[in-house]
Image (cartoon, rainbow, N blue to C red; front, side, top):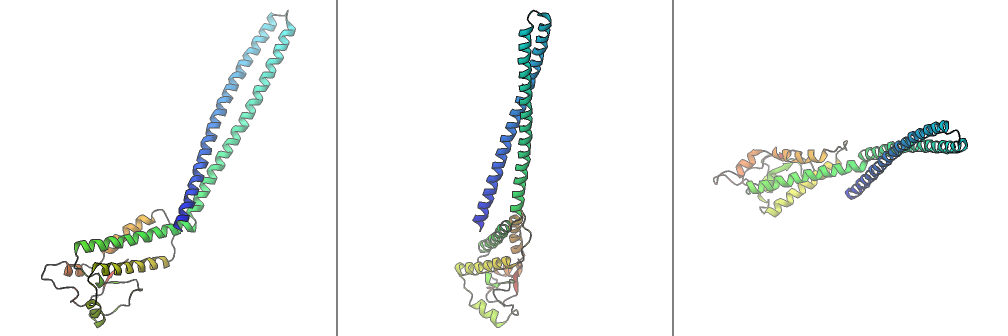
Amino acid sequence: MASECQNKAQRSQRGQEEAERKLDEAEAARREATARMEAAEAKLRSAVERLDEEKASHALARSEPRASKVRLVDTRSEIAGHKYEAGVLRLKIEQLEALERRALEQAQNAMQIFRESDEFRELMEEEAVDGLIRGFEDFRRQMLMICPKFDLHRLQSRLGVIEDDNEPGSPEDDSALDGAPESPEAERGVVEAETEAAQQTARKAPPREADEGAPERASKAAPEATSEAPTEATTDACGDGSAEDPRGAPAENLSVRI
């Protein structure tokens, strides 16, 4: 699903780049047409000036009326041709401007539709869940580095999918703590189970309006959530050598808020 969303995003990006390229081409064509129109106007002015000169020469050279009339007709036909070319260029400029506006509207509509699509929202939700999982993994690594004797099994999840709440100091908690594994592999398995449960709960939650800042907020929320774990258990496990083993103490109702 994420790859499909990325492909759609890439296609949309390519479409936008194509539209921008066409826009640049249209702008270049417009500038070229403007330059040609200015050149045509300059030619028109020069033709008018030549016409005036021809009229003056016709007034002076009355001996050659026919030749002057022929030149006058040729000049007028050239002026008419330049006027026609100027009108055609104006029409092309208007068409290019209309194409430019249409391309911009299509690109904006395509981006808006993609932002409002379910694929974009699901992609944002998946990235948010990945950020939450990375936050839990960072918390686990920090706990193993700072306090390797701390028992992660004493952290009871509030997700409601691992186990039911028991009273503090009950025989179930004592037996669970006595039989808890001490190896890092076992602790890693428990943390992975908790992260999977968190991911399932996050996916079952009602969808919210996705935005561009969802992954950043999720990655920032995960360390903050893990930092809310009770400090009493970490103090017992990370104290001096005279501190007792946390597995020998009664199980407390510790939890990690997500």
